[in-house]
Image 1: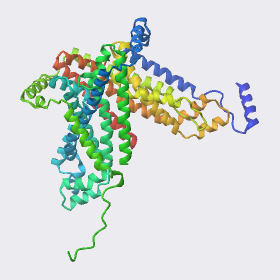
Image 2: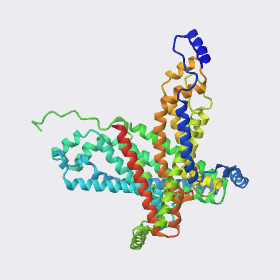
Image 3: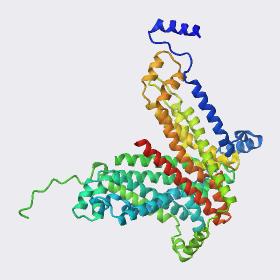
Image 4: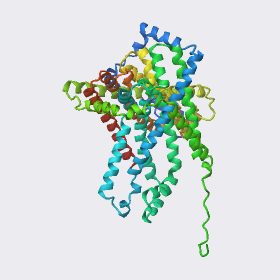
Length: 290
Length: 272
């Protein structure tokens, strides 16, 4: 122990007059203890998820994977297939857009019902019990709508209306309606409420106070969030295709099931390009809105 | 009119950013109309008496949910599997994301960082493909079951976390790292003892946030056969076991609500 100490001392006094730096990591015991605890905790996780990476490298699985990956090249570019892809890509965007339009129609009235800033009785202090419970119940409805993943809504609607874009549009409309409503209400309540309250106190109706007080103040943020959600909806409408709601996802699902690597490659490329384009448009719009 | 108070200055009609607002609104309206017009939506079928009846029957079959102990045990197992998938997937993604975020970031101004652009492109690609699509692809290599789902979550989340980590590393205060580098300390040690300790809380917070997202994602991944609650749901719904479907749906909603509640409470607690 003394020898390395002396060595360090000599070394440091030669350059600076700082106290000796420890030769070893002073916290190594703690680090080792945490690491081993983590390994012990990881064991059951691995068991529960059937985590067996070597399965990937077994001869049979390697062969299938290799063949599938090799068939990615060249991507399928037959003219009629490309036409189909273009049509499905548009359908994906259309499902997202139509879903968002309906979601907006669901979200707007629910937002107006649930915003506390538009309560007349709350101006005098506490909100009256009737309006309070109305707002609370509306909030619960919004939470319920958005808690069910859109994929589950889609599964349910595919059963009711059959395969096709209707299920996808409805699924996006319900889940995104819940999300938009909740976030709209949060945005509207987070701002400066003085103008709105003044309008209400001076006898404006709630709708007037909303249109002239709350909305102008928050319009930029509301639009920006809606555009961002539209971008998310495009991503999710592809995913919804996997349960039969039409669009690129449905083509991708069937191409995967047929092990048609070339088609999968084309579809993936188109999808990534579509998402990148939506991302660019959405970012541009949001920047323009400030 | 005489006797009117002097006109107040008229505020500018619109903020300058929205000057193209009318065009934007028109384009949006066009897009929405074109969407509705081009999709062969079956509203008639959806709003018909027949559909209402079948919907009613469908929902009616959900009740009462199957609460036999044997099935509940199965659902609990699915729930545990979902949680395990999300946790392990996020952990793998954190490790891979950290490994990829190093070449994807310029750690100090003088670094050439030649791998930055290609690594970022790779991360973007991983991130652009949703978990469910990854799951569909990985099923071919990993077979049906939670392993494929875990890998799918890990691959997608690696893209997300790698990107976020790289941004954080680049935004870390450069002082301590520069001090060590001036003393001739090697790259790895500079990262471990100067950069990492500074950004660790931020990295952890990103990782936890993604974990929260991944729990939600893991619940539905099974729909393509990648394990967890989603697989139970797709299985029983496919066989029209409506009572069992209702139980699985209930468990899913409970999980999402629980995650939301915990996240909300912990955020509020941290913000105090």
